Amino acid sequence: MEYIRHNEYIAVRLDPGEDLLENLQAVFDKEAISDGVILSGIGTFDRCILHFVDTLQDPTSAIYKRWEDIPLEVNGIQGIIANGRPHLHATVSTEEKAWCGHVEPGCRILYLCEIMIRILTGFGLDRKPKEEGGAIRYLTLK
Image 1 (tube, rainbow, N blue to C red):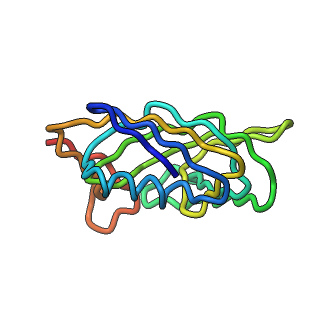
Image 2 (cartoon, rainbow, N blue to C red; image 1 turned 30 degrees about the horizontal axis):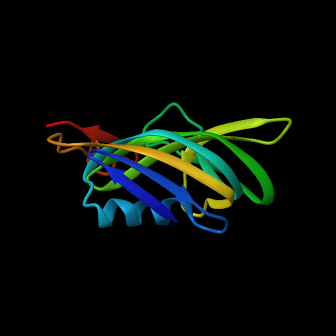
Image 3 (cartoon, rainbow, N blue to C red; image 1 turned 90 degrees about the vertical axis):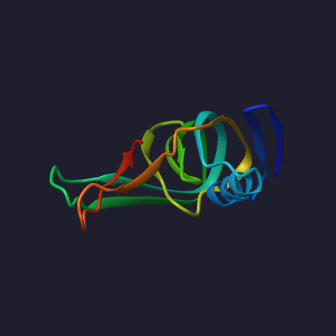
């Protein structure tokens, strides 16, 4: 993984075999990023885990979809950084089908992944359950 920072922007390149969330978290920690937005994310995975909600009620339950040892095109990653932690969604595809969902730990880079980040200052963002014991985490705004 390599990255470069220019003012409030960071460009990240992830290399084969690297874990998406682990490496992004390392950048957030090293650069002391509390709040930000993922402007663009493209690349390829050979392992991916996404989850999707499967009920209209809160607390919700989720379906986890896993791909192992299959080439996936990463058509887009977007999300926020709140209190130094990422909340990302991605669209991945094969030549025949595409899936979208919440990015889970364990997504591994096949050839490359290129991420552009915009650091935000003064927001004090966080994600917390709306109610005690609630499963869904909401963005809290100050």
